Image (tube, rainbow, N blue to C red; front, side, top):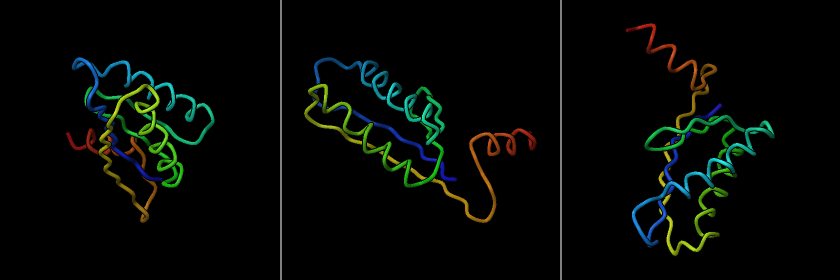
Length: 102
């Protein structure tokens, strides 16, 4: 199980708001979650995606393409991946581990 921190940044559109692009991306992620390939969480600054690494890469490619389909001329996507192979890990277990230490 891998966890990816993903930020898709549309560049070159009119105005500073990106919420419509974020909403489009969230719909794509929701569809993949309903298909059972990933789990995701929206945060104020990014989206966290958890799942099999190959599925995550497929989803990231789709969400990276999304702003282009709306006419955005440039998209910058930032990706950070955390994958443990020594023991099972997911978003919930990582948060639980920290909370137990507080």
